[in-house]
Image (cartoon, rainbow, N blue to C red; front, side, top):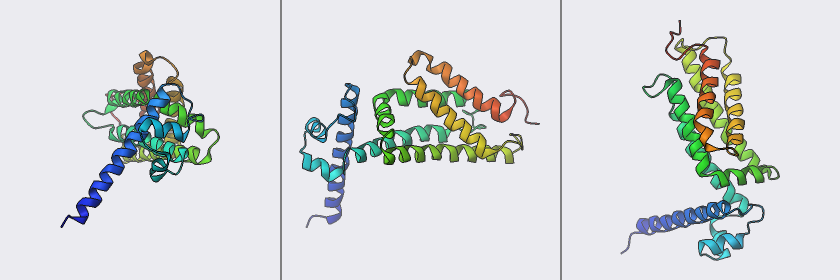
Length: 212
């Protein structure tokens, strides 16, 4: 007798593969210059080689698709940010600059999707709130780092971790969003300046100097 668990696993694998195909197709359509607002479910389904009814088995509507895509985009960039720690071998100011550059590169690879998210967030509350909530994860992570550094005596006690984290993340997000409309040749310089703003604003010292 066939295993019920194996059948369920096979069905889940097919579902996951089809979802990825649909999401990939949408990114391709966006890169071709199609506005997300103008993009229809019919276009998405046709490009993915499925029927409209099959599309609705996986997604409620176009907004649901965009929410999944934005979640994936932020998850990957959050993993880059979370991996940086000031005192790790690959940490410090140089490591932070590399982390910012990796985030910029990641967003460059998905520039059309990022543009679609910003487009829809202007008029759809669910997308706007989801994007804001994702940003809160970056703020919480930065707060954690700053508090750890304060406990270790490497960061001045008069710094407010919550306020500093909001300024770092929200300010950095605006710079990154603006940079996406510029030349990628400047990404390394922008990453370095973002890192320097974070480092010198929080540590108030050069990378190699003693905290005391």
